[in-house]
Image (cartoon, rainbow, N blue to C red; front, side, top):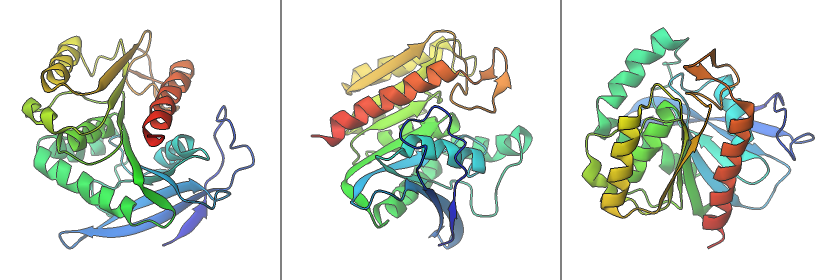
Length: 257
């Protein structure tokens, strides 16, 4: 595995000022085809720690997503960023991302299969406590993580940041085995209220342990410092900090059990 040190462009991330955030490229295969994710962690910590599977936004594996993985990892977790497109597919902007992400959203069994495969890669990483695993996702990745939950993955928690909430198989929610936390921008035009209402009904019908936090004034991509389309996709640093804190609060709870 190749290994690099991630530049620490992590303003506001407590505890990481002196950290050596390591990023390792991790190659793997699905049905004989090559994929390559990233393992991200603070190498000052030597003992095993909880592992998080992360599915990035629709731009896939990128430096920006590695920065977000480092923010999520802090000095508490090892984060494996899934590659859901394949090693040779690295979208350069929305025009290239839309067709590949749309193809997976249109084939939920394939989306689940690739996400499950990435989860197995996380399990194999040295230093990961396999008894304390969770999954997080952003935008497209948030929707992928919810499908992983509906697929019955045996994890401790599932966290979606400004992700899509719809599914063609809401009855699969009965297979969810762990708490679900949805961190949602109340003014997100990509996830309209009808979708939110359907998700709430789905969770209630399946009696899932779920939370939905709706942040006023936030739209899509509120954790993404590169998002700058007012009213549609826009970074909101205050909401982003609150959302990561909500994630950590849930993970602290479930990993202590």
